[in-house]
Image 1 (cartoon, rainbow, N blue to C red):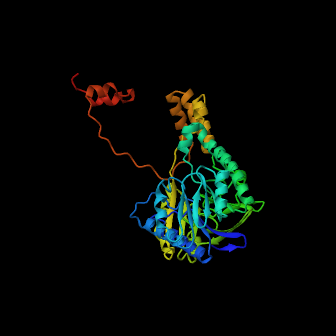
Image 2: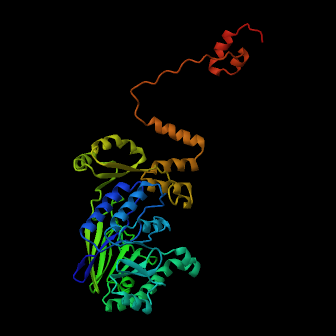
Length: 461
């Protein structure tokens, strides 16, 4: 084991997320980290949860490759693997990894307890904490290289059964804070005896930032910074959050290494693992950057700017590119996906995400509360920016005048219009329907009486 004076060098890896879809990224980055930790002669390797991305069958290539990396690491140092999020790392997933040990043991921490590394072997506490008798027995066998306080992912369903579903979210933090406070008394005793102490856990610290720069604030997170420092560990090794970040207090450090690789678009910051230099009461965590893939993200409010994309496409070779836009439904045809893909032909991957806003037709808000039809029309005009004056005039005519008056008024208005230069087409002649002679004479105008008398002279009645 490599000792730097009274310091011990620890390689801290987290959130490997091995799976079929992540295999290339995960193994490129974790493979680099394993080889770098071996070359740096780290004394211990710690994986703080989420070694896999989801349940993996035994024949899955990703599981075989991960097992090979753990086997490679255990040839040179003891390895501690912590149970991570149940959805990523179903309980029992890690049980086979102790079988992969070679030269040094692989230890799986799947429940809350303490474990000592003594002479290259792991010695676990009988309960959740080492008792004073167990500490004396350890020290009688020699000074442990390190004592770990292990807090893997807690099954909230068990906690909910104990305290009630309504209290489970906030009660978890209280229970873990109480445990860490109790562990602090044991770790102070160990530090006084010259033993290095590390905490290892998988969860969210209130106030930390996600890989997208979003602060995690709330009452349902597992830890607070104060509770973690109350554990009195020289260093506290965390997993679950994919962005590297750390906090320090009186020479002691709490830190996330972040995910080993970049598994999502838009993640900020470097990816890597942490090398810890640990001494009783002091710790330093240094990030070692892994060769994570580079991602480029471009967002547009409207159709993509092809000129801008043409400018940046030259620097996108072998990178992962995501282009997103938001566009109205009637303009969706303005986006040429084929042309965008052609611009980024040298990229490792191009992901196009278009959001189409559907055309929405909604009634005028508040129109139903108007008392009269005229008020409804006026209110609609205000919302639609339409001059409703002429319409209100026509509505008044309909409400106050009869049909004949309205017709006369409209005809009078038409007569006042300018005469059109184009003469209207003459209507086609409609043949008249023959009528009886008597009917014709009876309805004739008196001015035609002379014509009738002369025309029909001598016609029998």
